[in-house]
Amino acid sequence: MPAFGSSLRAFRAVLVALPLLLGGMAGEVARAAGPALDAARSGPCVEDPALMRRMHMEFLKHDRDDTVRRGIRTLKHSLAACVDCHANAKDNSVLGSERHFCQGCHAYAAVKLDCFDCHASTARPATKSAQASGVAR
Image (cartoon, rainbow, N blue to C red; front, side, top):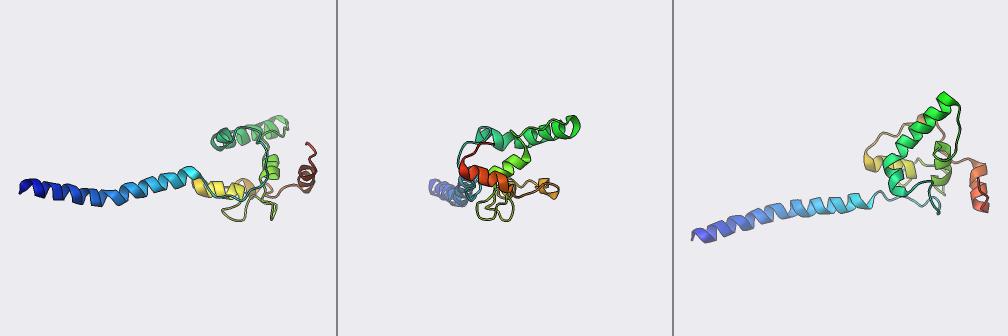
């Protein structure tokens, strides 16, 4: 009879652990998928998307230092250029809900989004019309 008792304890342990294991795996699958965002525009980003996800803050800090401290203005990693490309097609903004590009990613990563306390969160009208006509910036 001791063999049956230990088998029963093992079975109970599996029953207790199974939902935890499956819940953890489901969470990892959902996390790996990333946030659900409305499409902004198609086409390549200025960098590989995996690199941008990991390093965009460093790029923005570097551009901030170059612009504010050295007077060097470039568009490759500028916040305004990012907003121009990633603004939601419906309201021309990167903020508004978790389906908007910046707000959605920052909510997903649980990171404070304070860029737009000072900077515009909407695309520049001339840039949107230039993109629609295919004119390069």
